[in-house]
Amino acid sequence: MADKVSFLILEKSYVIRSGLLQIITDFPETGKVYELETRKNLHKTLKKENPDVLIVNAKLTDDIPDFITVIKEKNKNIKSVVFAGTKRANDNFPGFDLKISVDEAKNDIIEKLKKLIRSIRPEISEDTNELSEREKDIVKQVALGKTNKEISEILFISIHTVMTHRKNITRKLGIKTVSGLTVYAILNNLIKIDETKPYG
Amino acid sequence: MLISENTKLAEVILQNYHLIPVVSRFGIELGFGDKTAGQICEKYGIDKVFFLEIINAFNDKSYLPYKKLREMPLSVTVDYLLKSHRYYNKVKLPLIEKLIEQLKWTGNADKKNKDVLKTFFARYRKEVNDHTANEEQNVYPYILELEKNYYAETPDADFTKRLNDKSISYYADIHDELNTSLSDLKNIIIKYLHPADNKEITEQILTEIFRLEKDMTDHTKLEENVIIPVAKKMEDKLKRKIN
Image (cartoon, rainbow over all chains, first blue to last red):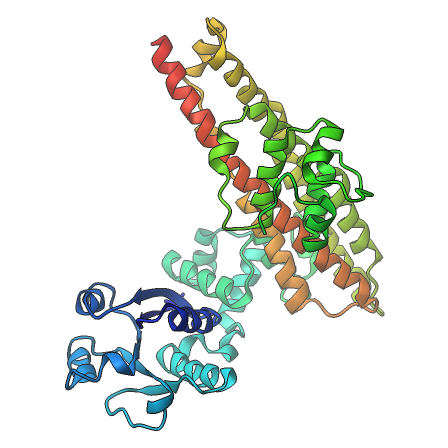
């Protein structure tokens, strides 16, 4: 399964931090979120946790030239979001991937962040949940009551590959148990109800 | 909201309907009038501390009452767990099963969809039944015996002999799997089942599954955070005492 997207929020104000946290935890792709009040442990945290996204208040970047450039030299793939207060809402922040401002409507902020997240993890975008033909073969075998080993022999693939397929199937369908996959297979005409032993 | 003995029970239920079956499990019937939680407990002879801890824990995810619950006799918690088993097996599961039976589709889909759902659910119901039966016949009696011997001046020799090769960790079997099946069923109905002609029944089924899932999650939390750690501690101390 694709890893979730991790965030680091650097923001002094508790109220703003909670607001940002609230917005990003609403995304299904969001994984760990680290919070910092000051820059004190910033570089240590960046190094240790290597977050996918850094959200930082513009005020905390002003007095350091090349603030974001320096970070990007070490955390090469990090996406940077600058959070601007009312006065700075129209400023440009070179080097940052995205700007959000305190005056923006909720929907606008969400749309912007969603786009950013999708660009980081294109594989977890919404429309890839359809099973591939190979995955359908696997579901069919699982529903017929076959073990991973048997499936690997029937389809001439390694057990490891079977397991990877099964993980992806579960992620795509949201169904974990064999009984659940059997129901799915029958409902989608991958197998007939009387083909399964326990269901016959 | 923190529920105290002075909180009116009617307000508690108005605010969170998930607590209806929980309250009912204590034998409390609706029609509370303006009675407070404390008054109701007195009326029904319910342990006030236990009652408040349970409803607070189930009402608010961030409420951590386990310390207090761990200080109470395990028999009180076991008694509550037994009542929730009865509720799953005798009330909720038969209800959902009956609802599935009522679903209707036009044409051939009817038999196929109903059969597949019924088979899935019958198997799930059996899983829950087996699981709870095992707890009732093996785990809970063991816990009660353990508690009795833990407080006894001279523990029963027969019991202590068995203690060395028995442990609550064997029973630390958790309801997770049962909840996974429920979650699968939710996904199937929401995403993959062709809509039934009587969609109000489908909605009812889903609502019942969500409620059951929540109740079972709370049930598991009690086992994991109260029963297992307390029993473990008793076992360790008892073993040290006799060895």
